[in-house]
Image 1 (cartoon, helix red, strand yellow):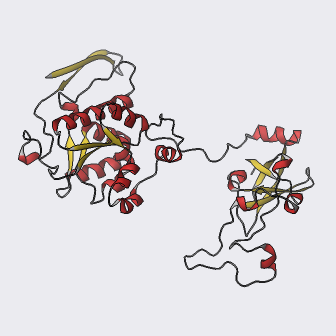
Image 2 (cartoon, helix red, strand yellow):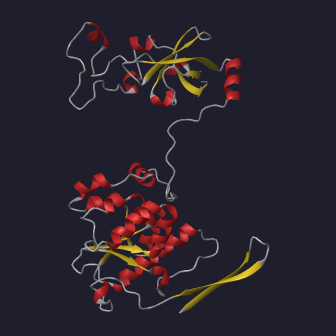
Image 3 (cartoon, one colour):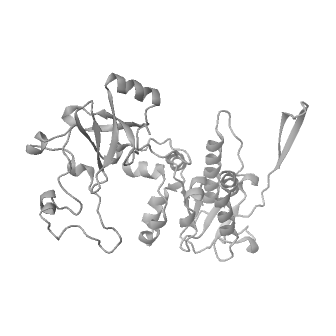
Length: 355
């Protein structure tokens, strides 16, 4: 079967040319499985004794190569559309995947779904290239399920929307984390699983189902203010300029001396420090008075400051792993009550770094 596509293209010289691309579709492309009677013995790479076959999508091939290269992962179907997309996005990952497919001792089979008459699809109107490729992967997985009715076909995808559409079409789809945990050797393989933004959202129950590959990392720190905003804020008294001094015993805590406030401003927590380092000249925004707090009452190792001052020698020491000072979490100096609340100091957050 021949499929053709024609379009007009303007050259650099200003000439308009008609380009015709022909796409040949075949029926005799092998499935690579020993369970398929129509598959030539020379093309067999997928075992007949396997418990299931895995179909991986592009984000799995891009992000989970360490897992795929493990010897326990076998009988994997790599679609040609996945290879093309991986090659366009990450050449190093593409070379690792090609090497894995070509290894004689590994059961990885490349299926040319883009050239098979029953698995090739055309992009629909208004459909993005990513959505079209995801649909092509689902069509190929469904074709394997129909071709090999006695074999369990599992689509591995980190895309929640892709898995949802696959399940609606009767295709068994799982995230990499869920698949690894379902295996008897899952505890060994779990360390090889790369955590993606979609997986973290799934674990926290906050995934909105619209994550695309590869997803953007969640924002941790607020943006720094611009130089003009800092200048205007200092003039209006909303911001206070000073030098950040980080506590040598607790790097989660620092102080900013401010003449406008008349006292040192406590900055507690990495988020409130907002990427500022010891010695940086910063602009600090005061928090509401009900959010003020006192310095952390405990030094590293869980000992109180009073016990440390008495020279107790049972304090924090090197634990043999190279760590000599433990970090005190900001929550330890967080919500305070009673006498500690009465001793609360002006507390703020870094809004920008001046120099």
